Every structure is written in structure tokens, then in C-alpha cells.
Image 1 (tube, helix red, strand yellow):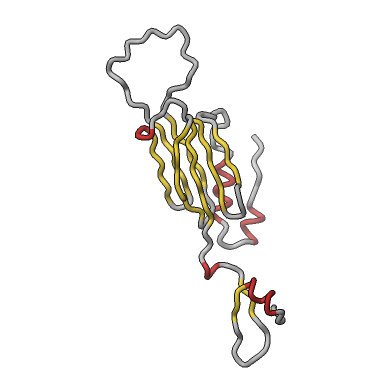
Image 2 (cartoon, rainbow, N blue to C red):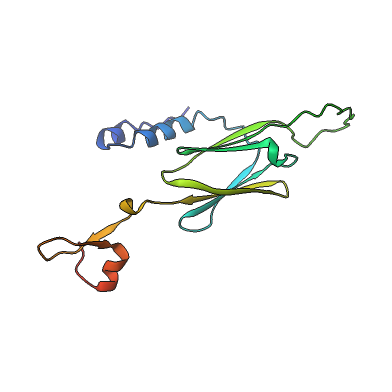
Length: 159
């Protein structure tokens, strides 16, 4: 088993423990568990779409939970009491599932929809204003902090 050693990076960084733990634990996830199949798509600079194939599931049988930095999608089929069908071949997967996605900081669920057997979950990265890059103009007794885009418009010297 190949395992990458993050020790040199841990010595030279501060506050990235969660990232290194996530990368180390990612190898522990079973490689063969690919049910249900899914796509992850980046639709813009700040928006993402997770599409999960959940054929046969009804909206009330799917539970979506957004926790801090984690999205959990679980499907629990309801057992019907009068199911006396005799299948000659059962090829459509109809089993319960739980799929977990690690979310980056400031990524939130905007909404979800179920159509044509596909569960579509919209995600958006919403970086707070205080964490967005800002330019500080040089000059004057009191430094003036302006937004990054405004510094370009004004043509002032920005550090």
C-alpha cells in the first residue's frame, strides 16, 4: 500500500491539520463503493453541482444533511408490505445508501431537486467580505483600505 508522508509539510505549515488528515484518510475510503454513481460539476467560479443517480427513490426516501464542511446524502427505501412480486432478474439497484462529500470552507448548499431519477444538489462558495482580498493604498497619514476591484479602477498605487 502506497502512503504519502505529509510529515515534512506538517512541520512547515500551521492550521492545515484538517486538510492533511482528510488526505490521509481518503485512502481509507473503500474504492469499490460506487453506489450510487454521481457527478461533481463546477458551473462557475463559485458554484458547483453534485448530481447523484437515485433511480427508484422518492423525495421522502432521501435525506440530505449539510454539516460544517460535510454533505451527507442518504437513501432509505421504504419496505412495501404487499410486495409479492417474483423477479426473474433483479438488475436495478434498490438498496439503501449513504454518500459523503467533504466541502471546502464557506461552501453551502443552495438547494436540491429530484427529477428523472437524478438528485441535483446546488452548492455555492460564499466567502465573507472580511476574508476577500483587499488592497491597501499607500500614502496619507491614515491608510485607506479599499476593495481589490476599486483599487484597479482608481489607478492608485496599491501594495
